[in-house]
Length: 107
Image 1 (cartoon, rainbow, N blue to C red):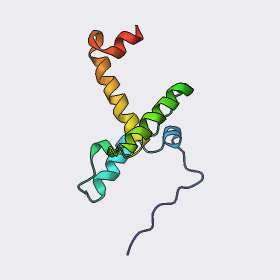
Image 2: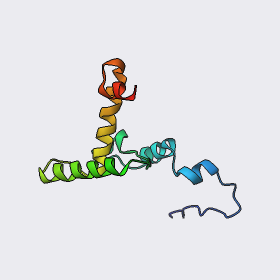
Image 3: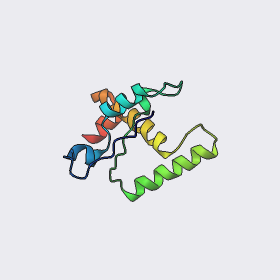
Image 4: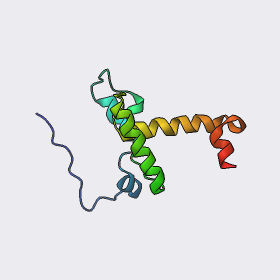
């Protein structure tokens, strides 16, 4: 007989961190390890929403680039995938320290 999932009790002690941030990466990994694995399940698929403030000009430039790339039929899933690629590229450039363009611009 299947057991019913545990319903949270209103009077249980709530973990404020879990309540504010949702599942942690450790919880997501634990859940992923108990679920059947598929070919597409990778470590990179565990994601968390973040928000940062950008200037209006930056947002408009980003949207223009995104739509231009979509018109060129490049395999971009969505804006989040493009932003993640751009941030990773920027982080690699910053790691070069004095040789990177972003590092020089920040000085």
